[in-house]
Structure formats: structure tokens, C-alpha cells
Length: 177
Image (cartoon, rainbow, N blue to C red; front, side, top):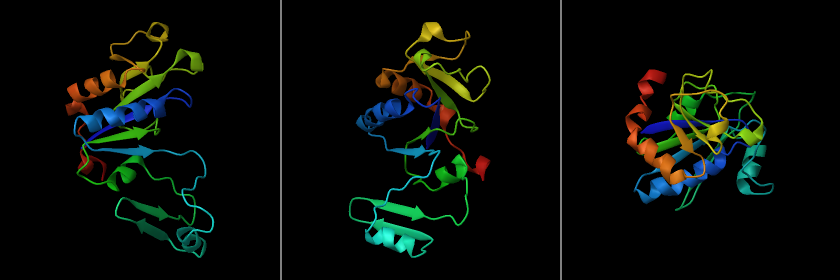
């Protein structure tokens, strides 16, 4: 499996880029998983549904499955921040690409998503794990870089660059155990 992170501030376009990359990789016959970091309390369940009622009753884990999908919900008794590597370990090994959104400070190779209009600083000047920058404003980058600069609005081109450089994204779980 190949793993690449997409890092950048809120509103930079990470989700939109990943949303564009998934069908490109699928058209190439590749399986894609996504790991997304949420900064706030979230819920995928609905009040009144059986699974919600099981969780409210105190179940540690609830697995719900059909012939089309599976969902695992795990309740932590106290706040628990899992590392990106622990989350990747939960995924099916048969996936070709794992696209990681968030985890800006992780030790994964990352593509920084940066927009001048967002008014946020760039991270590539201080993060050695950033291997490329996807931007819609390359002339406004705050500092010259030797890293590849990719067109944020061209997911086909970003996917082609990732595929051409896939060796640097091969994930070795034993290094993160």
C-alpha cells in the first residue's frame, strides 16, 4: 500500500482535492482508502437507530454490516488521540492508496495544499515530510522551493505525479509498530 498525507489549513482545499483524486485512482483500477482527522466531536450514527441505542447502553464497540458496507463505531471512555499509524493499521492491507487528510504534523510523506487567498502561512518551509505543494497560486508561494509544485485544480495531474513517484509513498508498517 502507498500512503500520502494532504496537509494544510482549513479551507485550503484538501477535501476537494482528495474527492477529485479518488475517482482518478479508481479509473486506474486502484482501491483507495481515506483516513480523515476530525478536530471536534462527531457522530455517524442517528438518535433512535439500533446502533445508537446499543452505544448509549454502554457498548464499547458496535459493528453494523450489510452486503454493501461495514461500519465500526468504538467509544472511548476517556479522550484518546490515535496516531495516524494506528488508524492505518485498522485498514485493509489490500488497498492500493491511502489518502490521509489532516495529521499535519505526522511523519508521513505529505502534499501541502496551499492557497494564497486563504491567508494562512505555508508549512513546506518548516516540514521536511512535505514532498510537494498543490496550489492554485504558485507565483505567490512565500518561499522558493525545489519541491514539485502541482496544480491544485488538476486532480488528474496530481494523481499522475503520485503514480510516477509511488515508490516514495510505499508504507512500511513495521517501521511504525
